Image (tube, rainbow, N blue to C red; front, top):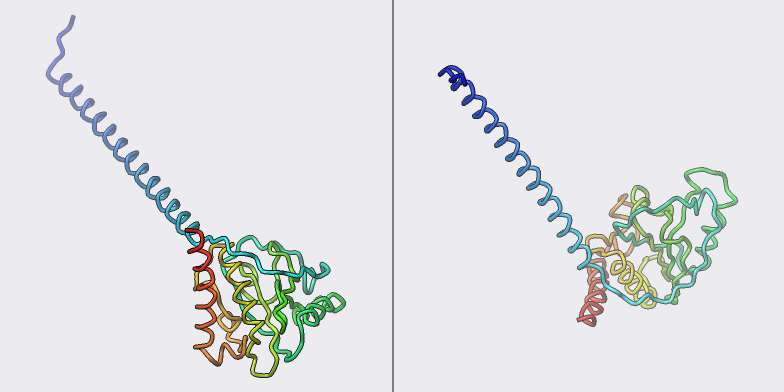
Length: 232
């Protein structure tokens, strides 16, 4: 058997060192990839847990379902793929009831396919607190401009030009909003006004009176917390 020369031995040592270095680099890279993967998975898990902690089984209020006829102006049947918020509106039609406003949306089906005719809402709450559903919760409504794609809209009737909701409307709005927030796992920041989307003074009274708006949101989440406490 031939003896290896010093040159050959050095060459083998260099090759072994190179292979070892490459192996170490690969191991370190794999460890880094696994670390990032686990970090992403942990983050997703925490986000999921956070979302689940917001889910509360609030009792659904009585809802009269009176869905609009599918049409291009008020019920386009476009999918609402996610719900990130609840948008509160007022009808700007003092003294009108829920069904009258629902029928106004229905009447849009007979008008030309134009932007000015595109209007609707998922829910309308009457002066007497009756809740009417116009659009399924998995479909978009034409109510909140850029937020149509990821929000549920609630129109509220009001007795006079001030835009302040009646006690019955207010109570029903709290119950409906609490149910929706509990169902979709939404926090307080997800309940907004039309005003917060476009700057339009809607709902009028709750834009002019910021304290009244804050109190309304507190009532909604007080209701949710009541159900959360009942579960414990």
